[in-house]
Length: 438
Ligand SMILES: Nc1ncnc2c1ncn2[C@@H]1O[C@H](COP(=O)(O)OP(=O)(O)OP(=O)(O)O)[C@@H](O)[C@H]1O
Image (cartoon, rainbow, N blue to C red; front, top):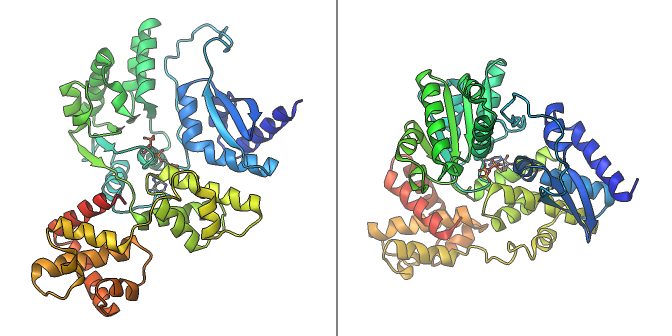
C-alpha cells in the first residue's frame, strides 16, 4: 500500500465514523485520492453532486484530518472524474430514476445562528417546518453563496422528520431534478418519475436558478409544483437571486416561486459573524479567545463558508507553528488570502459615509450643533462605530470631537430604542451598512 493509499484510508475511515452509513456509501466512499503533491491532495469525485457535497460539508473536516494525520497543512483539491478515465458502468440501468441526495443531519435550526441578515429567512423556515403546507408555502429563500440557504432548507426537513419520522421528503438540487427528468424520458420511466416527485409531503429544491433556459423541464417542474401545492404539500426552494431577476425563467414559474413568501438572506453583520465563529469553535472544540474570533470576523465579511474556512485555517496554522491562538497568528494565517490586507473599518470612514448619506458635512457629525437633521446622523454614526469597530466608548467619544462616553452611550441607547418602531431608521442603517460593506 502506498503512503497516499494509507493516508486516504485513514481519512475515509475517520469520515465514516462521523457520518451516517447511507451518506458514507453514497457520497464519501466513491471519492478517490489521486495525488499528493506540494501539500495538495487531489481528490477525484464522480459527479457534481459529490463535488457540491464535499465542498459544502467536508472540506474543513478533511483539512483537519489531513493535518492530524500528517502534521502538515494539506489543502484538499477536488476534481471531477472525466468521462475517459472513469470505468464504464456495467450494470444495466434500473427502473430507479432518481438520485437521492441525503440530508445532512447537522443542518438544524438549533445550530443556525440568527442575526439581522437571516432573521426573516430563519423565522419563515421554522414556521414552514412546524406547519408544512401552511402559510409559508412555497417558501423561497434567496441570496448569495455560502449564506446558509441549504442549511435552513435542510433544517426544515430535519425538523419535519423529528415531528414525523415517516414524512416523505425529497431534497434535490435543481440539476438533479433536470437529470432525473431527462433520464426518465430516456428510460421511458416518466410515470415513475412523477410518482417519485409528486407523492411527497415536502419537496425541497436547491438552486432553482439552474432551471433557466431548460424549457421542457420548467414545464415539468411547473406541473409538479401545482400538484404538490394543490394538495397542500410543502415546497421549499432556494435561489442565488430574486427569481424575478433570473433570466430565462418562464413568467409562470417565477410567479409560482414568489407566491408564498420570498425571503432574502444577506451577508451576516459583524455580531452575527462573531456568534457564528463562537458556535463553530465550540462545536469543533477549538479553544479560541474572543479577540481572535473578533479578529477573524472583522476580516472575513463575505460569507459564512469562508468564515468557517478561515477559522479552520487559523487553527491549523497555529497548531503547525506550535503557537497559542492570538490575533497575530490569525493575521499571519490569513495573509495572502485577501483577508488580512483589507483595511479595517475606521470611525473616520463611518463618519464620512454617514455625512454623505445625509448630505451634511463630516464636521457637523463631529461638531456640537443640536438641530435634529444633524443630531440623528451623529447618533447613527456613533451607533455604527460601536457596532462595526472594536473601539471603546471613550475612544468613540474622542473621535466625535471629544465627547464624553456617556453621550455615546446615550446615542446608542436612543438608536436601539427607535429601531423597532422607526422603519425609516432601520432602512437607513441597512443602507449604510451596505455602503460600508459589512
Ligand atoms: N447563520 C448560520 N449559522 C451557522 N452556520 C451557518 C449559518 N449560515 C451558514 N452557515 C454554515 O455555512 C456553510 C455554508 O452554508 P450553506 O451551504 O447553507 O450556504 P448556501 O447559501 O446554500 O450556499 P450555496 O449557494 O453556495 O450552496 C454551512 O456549513 C452552514 O452550516
